[in-house]
Length: 112
Length: 111
Image 1 (spheres, chains in turn brown, cyan):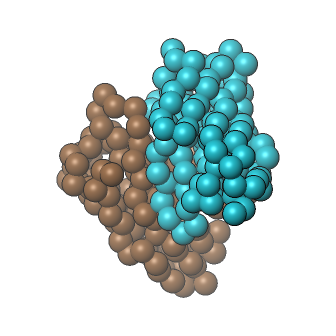
Image 2 (image 1 turned 90 degrees about the vertical axis):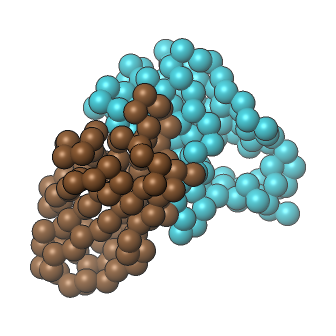
C-alpha cells in the first residue's frame, strides 16, 4: 500500500455547485492520477500530475481541474457539478522510475 | 487510440477449478501490463505487473502471460477459492505513463 487516502469518501451535491475531492499520500510518490469509474466505461483518466505544479489532461478532463501545491496532495475540482459527473473517483500514485500504480479507496460522488 | 478489452464480462466457476481471464489490447507498443483485483465498493489492488520484455509473471497461485505481438494477456488463477470472487481488471501502459483499462471480468467462485 502507498498510504493513499481520499476525502470525502462519499458526497452528495446539487447540480451547479463546485466540488473538491482530495487525495493525500504519505509515500512521497512523484506521480499522481485521478480516474473515474463508470459502468460500461471502466476506469478513465481525468488528469495527472508528474510533480508539484506540473499537471496534464487525461482522456476525460472536460469540466474538471486539478491542483498540486505539495507532493502529498492532489486536488480534483468540479467547477460546476453536473449529473454526468456522478461517478466513483479514484486517486492513484506512482514512484518516479517505478511502474506500478497504487490506488486509493475511492470517493463516491452523486450529483442530484 | 489504445483499446483494452476483457472477455467475458462475467464468469462463474465451482471452487477448485482453474480460472482463465483474458485481456486484449489493440496497440502492441506498450511498456507494461498490470492486472488488478477490485472487491465491491473498494479500490484496486495490484496483482501482477508484466514488463513488455517479459513473457510471464507469477505470484503464488497467480500466473500472467503476455504476448505483445498478438496483443493479448492471460491471467491464470489456480485452484480457485470463494475468496477469489472479485472483479479483475487489466491495464496497459503506453507512451506518457498512462494506464488504459479494460472493462473488467467479474468472477464468482461458488463453494
